[in-house]
Length: 184
Image 1: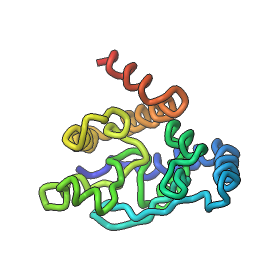
Image 2: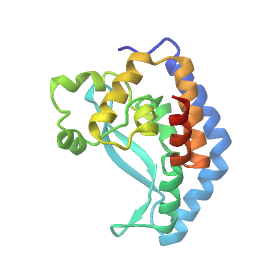
Image 3: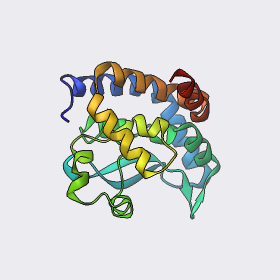
């Protein structure tokens, strides 16, 4: 299930536009995260990408001393903890839209380490995707939504999913999920 022509261009244009638009917000988040407890504002973690190659995902830190911070709770609720992932898109490790990037431990826990799951790792993982927006029912549903996205990926679908993701950040995931269910 190869990517459509122009997907990388769309990724770069969308990431660039988001970075330019959201830069002041990102600076504010970094300052607020640091001010809350003096810790580094960024969190780095190994994830598995296209071709099962490991890469380091960049996110805003939401925890300190095994607890979600006050700033972190807001970031998680709004999805703003994922803003630094545009760096991963620029570096070509992620796409704007695709399957969720998993940790090596998640892949083992879910049983997706065998050849039968290789199709899921044939594409770059995404900041958003069908599974990220619609799932909540478990690994089997996420896997089905990832396969559906990879089979039907297109410029139009990517633009819709990016738009819905921004709406979810502004209005909340629950509200957007309810709205999407009414459209079916």
